[in-house]
Image (cartoon, rainbow, N blue to C red; front, side, top):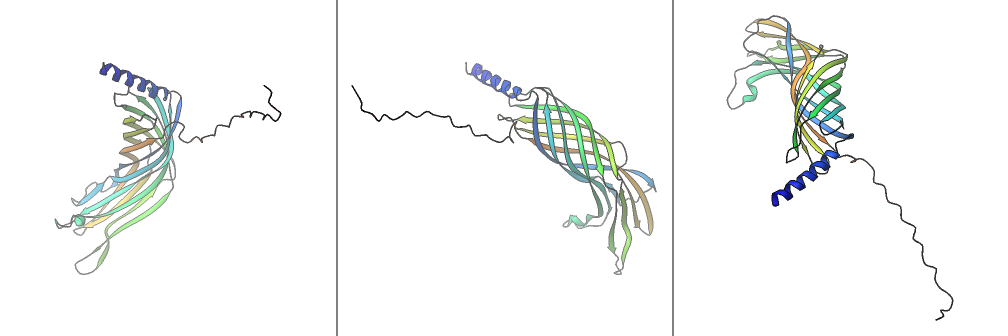
Length: 270
């Protein structure tokens, strides 16, 4: 009997949550991080064993809008900012006590403005109001043309500084860039209608958004490599969607006109 009552309550709750997802708009806030990958594009193909070309640790912040067509299909769009760039380093002798001296590194960071559009398929909610989602679409990323030079200055044993030890020149391409995007997510639907979404996002750029040339000198030998960045990354996104109508102003119900009884001023006859 208890199981039947529990299933009935869960069924009624599920129907209520499903009804909140038919032709419904929601606003949300999204933030996260990603590893932006750049690819070797020119210069010397042979690198010193001490040289490292790392994925750039970028971040993103977006204001998102979501339209739930029904309990299985939805679309999202928004407006936000994301970072991308380059990360180069040379390995150094270091102490096991101070690991921060293990690498001599330089980083170059750029910020882009993005407008994504994705379509999702939503699987059925489980008994805890959780579900999986898969989606795909594209994003338009807009960047400003900007040149940045970075230099790591090394102090030699003789006290002479060398600017040729590790340096880079990076340039971002001005204009709009198209990107393909795929996402796999897990979502929690709360009773009042708000939602919390965690998604793994795969992004692939269709053209170059930035280019970098890095120069370094190790054991009196100079090296030059070039790298191209298309905005490719794998990242994690957390999104909180506000409940439907969360931003609607509350209107006061007008007071009803109550007719007051007319006082009796004359004599009362029985």
